Length: 492
Image (cartoon, rainbow, N blue to C red; front, side):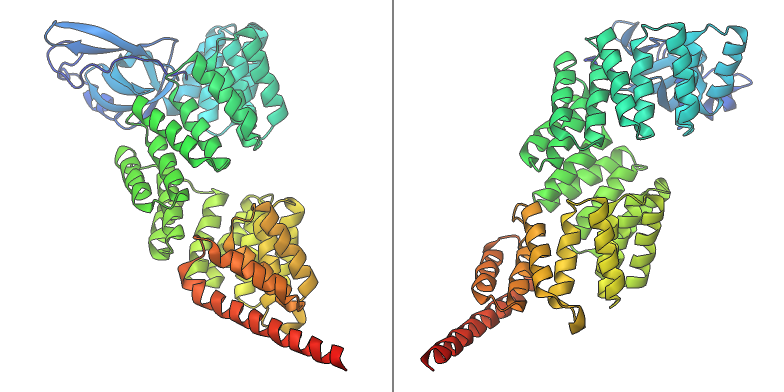
């Protein structure tokens, strides 16, 4: 999967056997049915070619790096495909439809049980079907047949990643790197495992090494950018996404990811333009629909967010995070029942996601079911003691709850302060909650101080500024009254 620097020369050029009109043949209809389908190459290093009309010759422009590719068009026995940003023709005889790949390579294995390449490719076909247990078994057989096969270790590690067996995955990638220290693919994959484990520093180290080994490795630039994004270093993220797009202007993922970084920098017009480009390049990009939906959420355009998230869910059914995001849209629209349904579906699909429990807690709170809300906030914190949103939600309930019996100033202060600490004091709404919590325990000096801090932030939502200023005035007046009462008591 390592990217290579091949020049893309020409496309869809007529005049040779490499771009000739499809000849009359009985199976011409069958060939054309491959358009838009994924295929798998049946051997290593399948060459991609184009025709150069001026020189009247064909030229090799690259080879297939990752065996699974999509057919963009067909001419006779030729398939027009793209691999790592390079486009060209390959012979139909060098590929098999992905849907037929398992049976195709099983037949090869039945004829020769020592055919390691057949096991390797069948493993990729199993993975494409979502059957990673079978994929891992086949790659283990490749390793038995050839203990020095770096690619087998690397791909087995990738499939173990998919099963969240991160320690085993890292061991496989490290062995792949030992066998082939120049394998940018193996180094990249280990970096991706670190990324999945939220060890972004080690992920960036490995992605950087992969880029050193293969400077045009698009995925390494893309995912290093996303690691920077997770570290909230958005300018570094943008630089990597820019480089990924420069290397492959047809990479929809890079545009979708760059849009996410623009959203984080509140440059929403640039974000929406990137999502439009991503969807132009790949109208079936669930990632682009999801990210654009998140941008609409940030803009509080909840109807548009719902439309995009519905499309994302249609393309990626069963994605727990999408249910979470759509729940946020319903919550923004005030449809708490639908929000609760989506959040509950998300917890069913992924019971370990603390953020979803925190969001469902907010929905329960909005519907006035405060005990259920407190239970969800506690579950979120149990799952992830660093889930700042759960502390913030709990603090807000304890400080502002309409049902006075649930108010608890000391607990509200502790929860709000923890939320602020976890967010590096960058969320003005949570600082506002901390001010309210201090007011609950009549510590008005702190209430005024933290309300002032919240109001100084340029990120405080404009639709909440007036109410926050009124609260600040209230704390100021109550502080003055308390001082007068204190002085009177002292005079007696």
